[in-house]
Amino acid sequence: QTNAEEHTKRPMNNFMLYRQHVQKAVEKQLKKNQDSTNLSKVIGAMWVQLPPQTRKYWTDLADEVKLKHAERHPHYKYKP
Image (cartoon, rainbow, N blue to C red; front, side, top):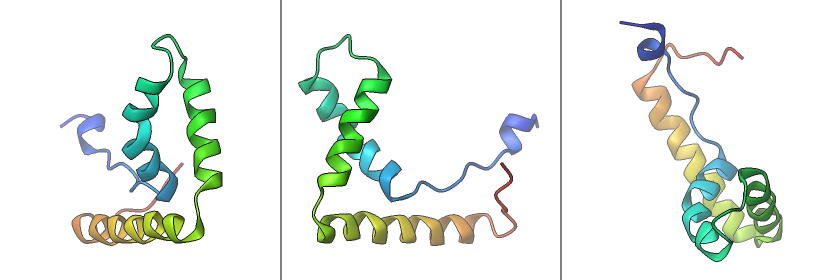
């Protein structure tokens, strides 16, 4: 196995889950030639404007993802 195959990715946080969910829809609304920096700014602004109960949904989902990740990778430790 190579190092890439052995590497375990971090579980996604609440914003990353939200971003993954809305990215394609936002890309369709923006011009195709928009760069990823602008896309990130747009999605970041959307995130800030979310109502607390919606943000809580994504936070709860991230908590579930983190628990499942811990079950699958019990010895995982984040090492930046």
